[in-house]
Length: 127
Image (cartoon, rainbow, N blue to C red):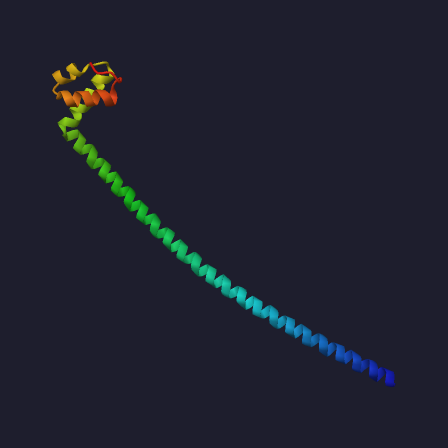
């Protein structure tokens, strides 16, 4: 009977040690889980901030694109109303069809303007 009591005492001691070790392990795991939850919460906050910033940038870009479109339309209107830009366009077409500097001058450009346009849009030689 002494052996049974001795075996029961040893088994009880082993069980107590196992329970203590399991309790410590569970405590460590719970701390790790809490830390991971805090990290996840922090990362979620950062992600929300990034999304908010990206949404703000998207609307900012949309406003800029709208302004660019308006400026482009306004520039086209100005170009259509400006007779000088039309004469330059006509002069460029003349240059591309082989006109000389003298011909451009006869169409109303000053010689300096005609030479400059010829350098920019014509073949590298001046007439």
